Image 1: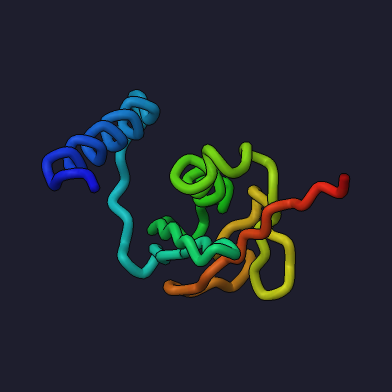
Image 2: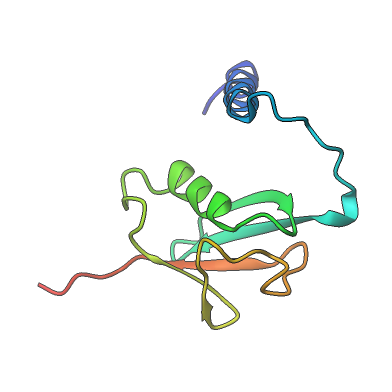
Length: 114
């Protein structure tokens, strides 16, 4: 298990990468009511959560899940994300799907017949 110092270093590196990607764009203040925390849970009960704007595309959460959980298990694009019986697409937003904070998206790895 990583030490507290190592975890802080990783978080700082991710934040630096994120803010560098913003470039010269102005950072906006986001009201708490505009934010939701959504989780992805797979069949092995591994869970990854992310807080995002209600209007952000869910592709951000899907990419985060692939980065954190599945590098050794699945490549990005493999598997299905499902919420409330419907397949989730990257361009969907929490607002599109009427999601509230605490909702979970299920992830199912595609099975290959041999």
